[in-house]
Length: 100
Image (cartoon, rainbow, N blue to C red):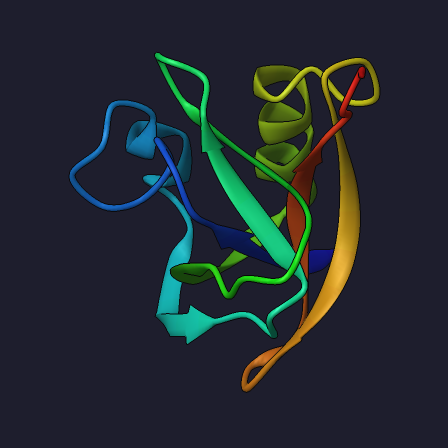
């Protein structure tokens, strides 16, 4: 099965974890609706609900890559996945599990 994923941090081109997407197909750039906020956690960013747009990249991936990304993002402990609308179709975005 194929999926779309929206990435905004270390998974983007030129960043430290982009190798996880080496077999993925880059579809294009996207700016989300103003429904999020991004925070710098030091080694990587985190997105939570808010009132800002997030810029990122959309990729076409398979189940194997999705499972690898879930492990990297520590789903469901540290992050959860949500679907967002993009010009390429609905894509997964990783949302930080805010533990206030």
